Image (cartoon, one colour):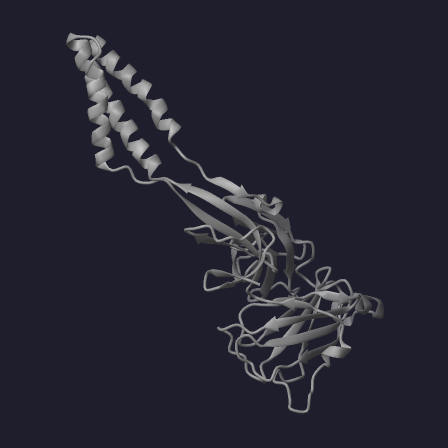
Length: 366
């Protein structure tokens, strides 16, 4: 009896290589160097400095990095951690209200963690959460180091419906980062620096936007942990007298398109079919017949059983491999760094580097 069990075990082990030979794995059809960057990143970490640290004071934090992650921060002396919400792709914001039991001081370190796909990156806040001594009575030298907005303009549109464009221009501190927020739209967007101290870009109105002609628009310029804010003093609806900036007299600017992207990778994924009971049964029958031809007596019985077991496994996997099919995944990256994967049942015909627009989960060549 022991010999029979040993023979059965040996036959099952011998059948396992058939199973391993039919396992399929995803295949990369086209790779792009940036597509392999799995580790998250933090590009910026800011705080709105406050005058005093006392119960009820709100600390507003902004973090910029890899989109689609889970961002938290820890303040030394605080009784709890803060979870930041992703207000737009790659932008995380949150407010910590100081409680009576918190022991936060001007020198408290603030650490941000950004987790994406079980990988975490960390950034330490480089600026103080409290304004320096005499910040409200700062000298001319200190004031000169503060970022500033000298002018904030818009070239309006005759229609504020989806697809129309608004051109914003900010002039101020060179080498800084400028972000614009429009009431009635989601999140913020950035203006690229087209020449030293001049930031300009186009915003394309989205279907979900509800922007009024007199909507409040603010521009924030950030530099080395400090910032200044300016409010637009013009309506967004262009007047009939041709008000607004003349495009013929303006430098060429970067176009800000919320649904424009670039193809980073086209992956081919091998999807296994489901092995049916028909394949399992057929394999068992064939395996049992072959096993029945081996040995005699109890040895033949063991070989028959082992053949049936191994044949069932192999039969099901062979059928599953025969029914395998290919599925395509196109990875695109937006201008703000966000990525998205679009699945296709058939080859969509896109190549790495193609400029596309994403409309309701479908790629359109730009």
